[in-house]
Length: 148
Image (tube, rainbow, N blue to C red; front, side, top):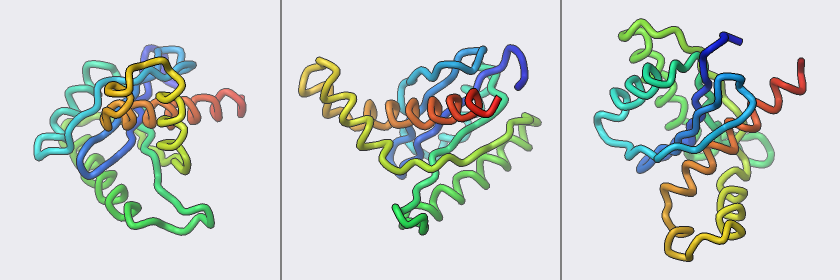
C-alpha cells in the first residue's frame, strides 16, 4: 500500500460511471459525483486519478450468481483495457483490480431507500451508481484489511 495515495472505485455503466475514492489510510470509501460515459470519459478519469493521487483502481466486475459472465462483462473488460492504455499514455502507474459486483446496485438502492432522502433524490440513477461504486470500493478495502 502506497502511503499518501488513494484508491478509486468504479461502477461501470454504458451511460454513467459511478465513482468513489478512498481516504489516504485506505479505510473508508466516499462516493463522488458520477461521470457520464461520453467520449471524453478517459480524460476525465485521468484528471481525477491525478488530482486524487490514485494508486489502485477497483472496477466492479459483473458476474451471474453461478459466476458466469453477464452481457455487461465484455463491456467492462474493454473499458479496463482502454483505461490501461490511457494510464500508459499518461505514464501513470495504477494497478487495476476487479471485484465481483453482484448485488451492489441492489444494496445501493436499499441504502438510498432507507436514507431519508426525498423520493426524487433517491430516484437519481447517478446517485445509485456512485453509491454502488462506494460499496465496491469499501468491500475491497475491507477485504484488504481482513487479510492483514
